[in-house]
Image (cartoon, rainbow, N blue to C red; front, side, top):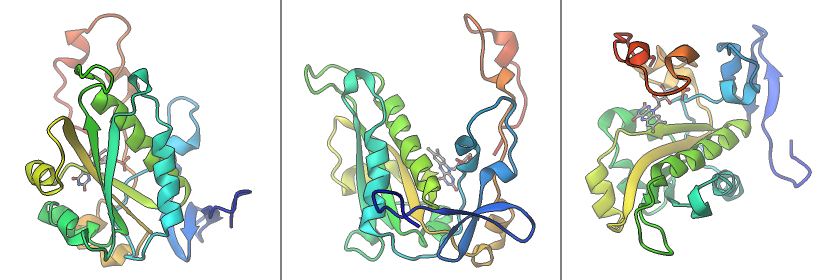
Length: 235
Ligand SMILES: Cc1cc2nc3c(=O)[nH]c(=O)nc-3n(C[C@H](O)[C@H](O)[C@H](O)COP(=O)(O)O)c2cc1C
């Protein structure tokens, strides 16, 4: 199935249990909106994206990868200075082991079945005057989310990772001083749940979010709203 420009699109299908899934070449990925409920009427796009770990190990076509990067490209940024940069490797390429080896053992277990590993970095200074950019991480976050949403729309697993060695990433990947290492991302085609170790199988489902009231505050910061919360973070 392709869009008018000939790009491959994921197909919406319903499984035997009536749950809508994204299907790509036979492997099904649950849509987040089948488990998640929003309290206000947002587009399902935001509920559908989630972070599975089961990936098939199949390669990702270059054109699909470029579509993901293109989505990141259109993120907004302060002064439109686009501080994000993305270093990437495709599976079985020369530098794949270098990127994979940066990950924690726990992340390597499932991310080794990815089709691509990405490292998001951001430039901490403006190009035009060399002054601190302040919003480089904020802007890089917007780029990552664009990429994640686009990947989900195409039926790819897109999973952000903080579990890697930031210092080694900076030195081994020759990231210059004025760039901040932000996060890594695993991208791949959905894979069989059963191929995951049991501890990952148990958490392989769309999770929830805390109520909106615990996130927003009209006016200045209020300690009584957030300061005393003993709630466990939603994993
Ligand atoms: C910047 C970032 C770093 C993350 N690091 C890891 C990681 O190292 N390992 C992992 O298994 N999941 C990681 N995650 C996935 C988060 O746990 C996940 O996004 C969060 O629980 C929300 O779930 P959802 O993405 O399915 O909506 C990371 C996500 C982000 C955005």
